[in-house]
Amino acid sequence: MKLRNSLALLITATLVGCTTPAQKGVSVPLQATRHNTGQIGNVTLANWGKKTGFNFIISGVPTGASLPLRLYTFINKGSCQQPGPVAYAMNDQVNTERQAIRGWIFSRSAPVELPVLLAGEYSVVVRTTPDSGNLDVFCGDIKRGSTVN
Image (cartoon, rainbow, N blue to C red):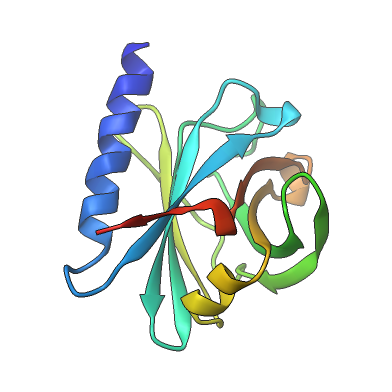
């Protein structure tokens, strides 16, 4: 339980530091898939003009994932419950950074404006690389995110 509290505090600190007062971001909780049960995560989306920035924090990935940890990220049409095709791949960079407390952080960007993502039905997916099984490990519905000041 202590780990979850520490990670929750780190997520909150990350969210506060991700946006400026004049700009609102959106926080989307990430649900672990059956391949990654027991893990927690969150992604904060920020409006970067013609792009959207994504700041991820996750507690972990399945045992056996190759290190250094590399993850693919996608924006899919549809929801986590009813996924559609990939709308945007955010894989020009796949590296992550290990945190002092158990967890990983990483950032990505997508060539789409945040209001477009919020107006449609999209989900964000985190997947391990092929050498780590090519498994979907987290998913979050963008439309259901809440605004962060």
